[in-house]
Length: 94
Ligand SMILES: [Zn+2]
Image (cartoon, rainbow, N blue to C red):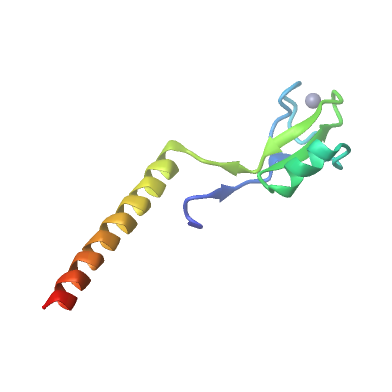
């Protein structure tokens, strides 16, 4: 799973509002909704010191390539599960 999920630090990302780089700073969650967002660890609250924009940014990027890889893992896990079950069934029946 570690290869599939790629964590990033949105603090180094561009501001979604004014596009300035290195202007984002971690912001404290104010409302209950924002605290809930923070708890998931998928989003963190940020504030732009340039334009005053404030919002949640994703800390995980899931690319198409990563999704494909994740799908492959699930398929392999399911197929090997079925095969093992069939082998065990035959083994126990004999
Ligand atoms: Zn900004």
